[in-house]
Amino acid sequence: MTSDFHYDFRGTRVFLTGGARGMGKGIAETFAEWGATIGVSDSNGAGAEDTARAIVARGGRATSHPIDVTDEASVQEALDAFCDSAGGVDLAINAAGVLSVHHVVNMDVAEWRRVLDVNATGTFIVARAAAGAMIDRRTPGSIACIASISAKKGSPGLAHYSASKFAVLGLVQSLARELGEHGIRVNAICPGTVHTQMIDDLAEGWAMSVEDMLDIQVQKRPQTPAEIALGIAGLHVNAAVTGQALNVDGGTVFH
Ligand SMILES: NC(=O)c1ccc[n+]([C@@H]2O[C@H](COP(=O)([O-])OP(=O)(O)OC[C@H]3O[C@@H](n4cnc5c(N)ncnc54)[C@H](O)[C@@H]3O)[C@@H](O)[C@H]2O)c1
Image (cartoon, rainbow, N blue to C red; front, side, top):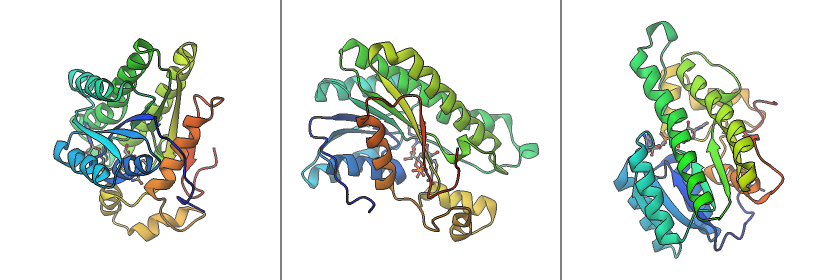
């Protein structure tokens, strides 16, 4: 069984970043199928709009919001617009992210900063805005941050990416402790390989095939965005879970 399982998220308001393509798009579509109202945001505003439009065309509920997760004003504007239209936010999903492959001796500081800025600082900015909205509107919910198995192990060419994802786990644990008093829970998901453009870029950077990349997994197949959504949903509905990092990686990392 994979994505055949259906949650009932009618009435649940989900704000998601990185929804123009790849995993974020698939997660948005899956939560929409489960009945949630989705705010699809991305720096690719046209792509976010396409995702939202397709959801609405299939009978779902979605709005789109251009956003740059590294820009505080744009994050606040997008989240305010979504909360005003949907009446609040119950689940915020940080799926925006960037990756590049550079051996550390050749890595520009500018590239290190770009990856840390989007993946770590952007996640902080969105989580802070979402927590603020939940506190102000007295609608405590949960926040899910897409980290990676790179949050649990280093890999060649990914020092900046791995550092950014380790940072996400530190952020998640700290937010979980700080926001618990408001009834807000914060968790991370660590995907292994979901076949998106990011994975094609990684395979190219490592000069290997995606099939070879899957060889480190117990299951020799990529995870689907719907399977990542199932992980997020499980963390969201379980009121006893906060500060955790769930590996949805086909059996790659066991800690
Ligand atoms: N694909 C995988 O196997 C995999 C594995 C582990 C973790 N992840 C993580 O999952 C998330 C989604 O990855 P993906 O594979 O779908 O990547 P992707 O490159 O296909 O999509 C990333 C999306 O994020 C958006 N984005 C980038 N910078 C942004 C910014 N500053 N503000 C707003 N949006 C921005 C992009 O426009 C794009 O739509 C990322 O955080 C990635 O690190 C992916």
